[in-house]
Length: 70
Image (cartoon, rainbow, N blue to C red; front, top):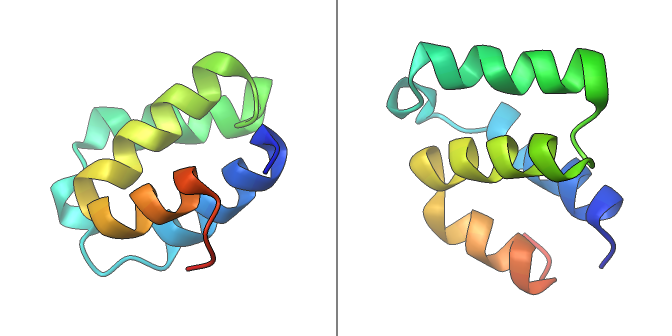
């Protein structure tokens, strides 16, 4: 999967998570800033998105990064 597709899948994982309380506020704002300014498929935006997803949904994040369907 390309990074753009993975970023979209990770954003879906993050936004549908019931464990968002595990993501620090600062990291959440960093994801929002990356989304609005640079895009989540850039290297830095993708890195921030993956970090947030690993905190709230580690198993789903691993599946997406391996290219599997969630």
